[in-house]
Image (cartoon, rainbow, N blue to C red; front, side, top):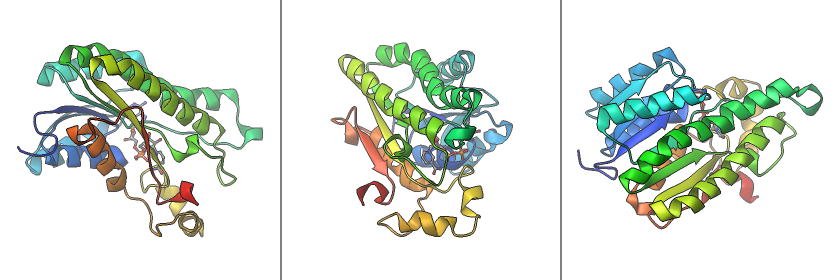
Length: 253
Ligand SMILES: NC(=O)c1ccc[n+]([C@@H]2O[C@H](COP(=O)([O-])OP(=O)(O)OC[C@H]3O[C@@H](n4cnc5c(N)ncnc54)[C@H](O)[C@@H]3O)[C@@H](O)[C@H]2O)c1
């Protein structure tokens, strides 16, 4: 299949829902062979959707990527299926919110495990194979929470985690340069997904979110997946260590 990712193999995490599912469909449409994975047992249906649309995708689930063994399992699966990979798209994460008086250490620590360690483990397992491949593209999902506080949500743990994601990605980019490995983050603002839909049903919540944006609509998973597609493709071959904000202009005003 010809396309912007023709000939490439992409590991995408958290393909069972939200932005990960959308990215799997989009990457496959652009010719990538996709290796999906998710904690959720139902995630395999996304591979069926991709195949029904004429794309190529294999999927491993359930797998917990917040522990080293899970990440190693995904890398071994990708190698067994396709012999190597070019793109590591760290999309999967789970955030836990509490305002400062209620933020206990377990909640804080769990957020780091499921938002920061989750990236460390997969990059650690994938790195030697990207080096052996002669390079690749790492895409890590951060958040505008890395750059600003919030009075509406208890972001302490989430901000710390996503701040770490942007910082560690610069180091992957720096050490990766010698191996032709690029690494970039995307910082989404408010995007429709399983994690945000419960918020969006609260009265007035969506209106308040949109009021902070310059572009007056809810962000969709496609907005983030399309940015990831650009960072995965050779169109971004001179871009590494960057962070692209996808937030309808919230950070700009
Ligand atoms: N939705 C937003 O507004 C928003 C904003 C900023 C950043 N983000 C980030 O975008 C990314 C995708 O989030 P989403 O909103 O699409 O969420 P989502 O809940 O719809 O999808 C996340 C997927 O990752 C999987 N996952 C979570 N933890 C996992 C683990 N330990 N092992 C394996 N799979 C796991 C889940 O099962 C789920 O299928 C996350 O990194 C999130 O922090 C989201």
